[in-house]
Image (cartoon, rainbow, N blue to C red):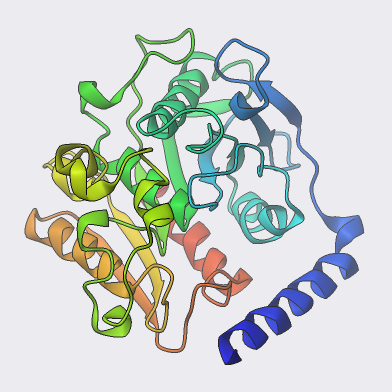
Length: 300
C-alpha cells in the first residue's frame, strides 16, 4: 500500500510539472514517420531536432516501457520532458518510436526486429532527416531498457536483424546504450534478495513469447542481452533502483557484470531508495544520460 501511495504521489507531481511546462514541451520536427514502409501505427516514430538549425545531428532512439505490450506510447509528454529536452540541450536528435505489442501484434523477436529497422532507416534516410549516421545511441526504460540493451549487445548479430523495412543492407549497430531498469534474463527474474518472496505469474511468464518461459529456454536466452556481448559491444550506462520489486536490481547487476567481464565500458548507477514507479527516471537522471551520450559522441 505504501508503495502504491508513493507512486501515486510521484505521478501527481510529474503530472503537475508537466501541466506547468505544457506550453514549453517540444513538438516533433517530423511526426509519424513510418520506418517499415507500411501504415501501421506500431511502426511509426517521431523525430525531434534541436532548434539551432544545424546541418545534421547525432541521434538517440528512445523506447518506452510497457512490459512489451503497448504499440503506441511514443508521444507522451513524460518522454518529451525527460528525454527530448535534455538530449536537445546536448545537440542530439531524439527518435521516439513505437514497436509491435507482444500481446496484440506479434511475439518476440518482433520487438527487437522493429528496433533494428528504426536504426537502419535512420542511416538510410539520414540526409532526409538531418541525422548524423556516424552516431546513433539508444535508450529505454523498463521493457524499453531491455530492448535498448539487446539492440546494443546484438549490434553485430545477423540472426537478430529481422526483415522489417526497406533498408536491409544498412547496419543496425548503435554507438552507446542507456538502460533504465530493464529486464535482462527472464529465467532468473526474481532470483534476487529484494524479490525472493515473489514468483512470476503465468501471465508474466507468457507475456513476451506467448508461451511459458519455462518451456522455451532457448527462446528466453535468445532475448537475453548478455548472450551477445563481444568486443564490439558499445559502452553502457545503466540506472536501477535498489528497491525495485517489478524489475529487481539483480537484472541490471547481471548485465553490468557481464559487460565488465568482456572489458566493455559499463557504469551502473544505483538509487538506494529507487523503485519502479518513476523516481529513478527523473530529469536529473536523464541529464546524466544526455551527458553520457555527448561524452561518447565526442570520443569518436
